Length: 234
Image (tube, rainbow, N blue to C red; front, side, top):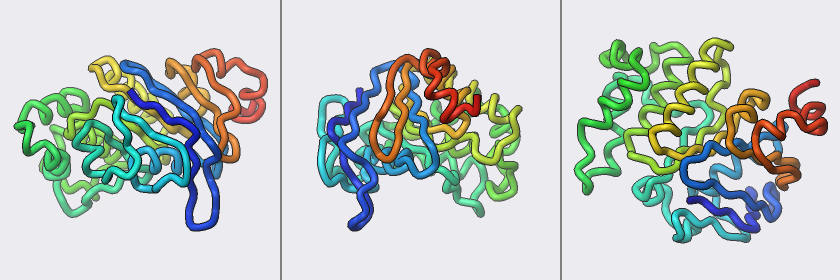
């Protein structure tokens, strides 16, 4: 579904990514883990068109994604939930969710997506008339994920979805990610909780200084001594 080959990117003259290779297949959860500053967020931003690569290729469903506007990639089925959630605070929960439908004007996306989000996150239906800025951190994260799902994605990219959440809420969000995968949406997950991310991922990549240094099945990497010492504190 997604193939990244020899990807290099950065900001101005600062090179962040160095010939990075990764892929996401249909029906997978793929985790990308690494220390702060390793280039995880830059990777997602480059894939989604927010940062233009200086080299390499990004292919989504067999078509190049390089130079394509982010809004067009969303319309093609590539959605990203950014770190920090980027909600419209003064709008209600339901208004935020309906903002996710704007890319679907042509395919008739309307109501069933909303029902599916409410089925996944019942608390959002309870709070649908509440302003987004008044929600708890966990509820805001659920809303950000729900808004991305309203676009009808084939691949959902999540940047640090558990940031600032309690262990209980982190578990709830990660369980929701499994449910999203089970509904047919592939997931590329950047997550600060490396242990949980690796154990839930079908496959995973370890990023250091903008380069992939390890890859393999998530649970196997979680047992790798190098990973355990560097990222799991074991």
